[in-house]
Structure formats: structure tokens, C-alpha cells
Amino acid sequence: MLPTSHNTQQVKRINVELVKNTLRTIGVGTKASIANLTKLSVATCGTILNELLQTGEIVDLGPDESSGGRPASRYQFNADYASVLCLIIRTEGGIHSITHTHSNLNGERSDEQTLMLDEINVTVVEDLIARLIEQHHNVQAIGIGIPGVAHNGVIGLCDVPELMFQPLGQRLKEQYEDVEVVIGNDMNLTVYGLYNQQQFEEEKNFAVVTFPENHFPGAGFIIDGRPLTGNTDFGGEVSFLPFGVSREEQLRMLKTTDGVKELVVRTLVSIIAIINPATIVVTGDTMNPAMLDDLRQGCLDHLIPQEHMPELIIQQDTRHAYVTGLVAVTLESLTYRIQVIEKQW
Image (tube, rainbow, N blue to C red; front, side, top):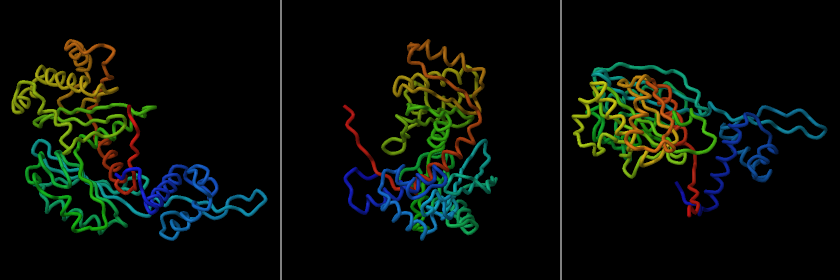
């Protein structure tokens, strides 16, 4: 993101984004109402609205009801002006799949399908994307969720071996120069979707940690309302916490009820002590809602003070939150943003 020092062209792009987002939020607005909400001048709003009409990003619904003077034109955000394509890559129990969905600019999804595959590699992903882009209108962004880590478009550790160390993001950008490409970790995307579902009145620290069968645990974090991925997108790889057992031993622990509880409690205690979240959602097919009281008591037994205990939630099915988070992040890649740095101390 850009610092707060910016030039005239950047200011214009910020104002355009402000007008579009305002119109998306209110549904229908006039030049005067948009100016009032954005605090921009009526003249500035008029110029921006005319430009957006020409590109097709908004539509003119015709004149408003007259109150005596010349009726004002009503404008509506055109959510179907462009679209985004999202893919979720999974490998669970030796079963490989890609779920793909198409979304308009309001996040309204369509054509969601899941393909079961013998294997998943870069060629399989590229061929699928090529077919889907041909089918859908004006795709401006591609979002891909993976069970692994990606940094600058290069996939690192990943549960799909054929994708490890592959520059998938870079390859896609070379093929589709005008299309934004986002590759995200499944946990980071799920935590973003679940965080938005909580509807906190103010920004909070929030965590999601998952304990799947036959795979290493993972976590995702929101800090003061912002996703935390880390310097190289390695944040959340909780299987590397120094519990005194190897990662392979962690997989064995996940096969027994006592082992699961011990590993989950250790992980929760670490997260609570480091980021002090308001809520932690625990997911994964090794989890059972009946474990909730034992997990909470386990944290207290490890000397976490009662007043610092977060709300604990066990939610086994997070597929909807995962897709919601991926679509949201992919849509955000199309917005022009600046970074406002406030003095913290």
C-alpha cells in the first residue's frame, strides 16, 4: 500500500474508489447525496460519475422524483461490470479437488462446482483457469486458496506436493497481464471469513486454529481487524511451535482423543499468551464440540488467568467461511488503497 504522501493522480484514484464504494453501499444515489456522504464537492463527484458512466462501472437509472426543481439523476453501482474467479485447492485423505466459483463485484457467487481430480499440478490449475476465463465475463482478478504457504506468488510448503516451490502466481500474471492474482493460505482466508461473520462492534484480535486428520495443524490471525500473515507469509504455522515433540509426533497425537486435547491446549495457550485474542475458533475433523469445556479448563490449568481467556468456539464446517474469505480478498485486490499510518504512542 502507498504512504499517505501522494500526488494528484493518486488522490483522484482514491476519490474514484470512494465514490464507487459509497454507491455500492447505499445502492442508489444522486450526485448530491454521494457528495454529502463522501465529503467531496458536487463538482468532483459529477466528474467522477461521468467517467464511471463512460466505462460502464455505474448505470444511470434516470431522474429522481422532482421536488420542484430539475430532477436529479439516480446512479447505481454496476456489480456485473466485471467479475472475479476463485479456486480452492484441497487434498484430504488422498482425495484431490478444486472448487471453483465465480463472483460479481458485490461478492454474489454463481457457478460453484467441485472437481475431483487424480492429481493437481500447475498445468491442471492453468488449464482450468483458461477454460473458466473463456466462460465468464470480464474476469479482473483470480483468487486461489491453497493448503500451504505462498509468498510473492511462489508456493512454498504445501499439502499438494506437485505445487510446492512452483511460481504459480508469476506464471498466471505472465499469461493474464491485466488480471490481479491472489494466492492465499487456506487458514488465513478462513479466518478472514469467520472474523467478518462475528460482526464485532470494534476491531478485535481474533484467531482460528485447525486440527485436521493426517495434516499438520495451522492457524490464522486477525490483529486489530487486520489479517496477520507475517514477513514471508509463514505466520500461523503452529506445528513449528516448540512443544518438545516433532511435527511427525504431532500427527500421531491427532489420532487419539487425549493426544488431540493435549496438542490443542498447548496451541491455544501459546496463541492466548502472544496475541490475547477476543475469540478463538477451533476447527478440523479431529474436533468435537463436546471437547469445549475440557479445552477451556486445560487453558486455565496452564495458568491462563480467567480474565484473559478468550471466547472459545468449536466449528467443524468452515467451508462457507473459507469461500467467503477468498472472494472478499480477491475483490479487495481490485481496490486502490493507501496506508494511513497513525502515531501509536
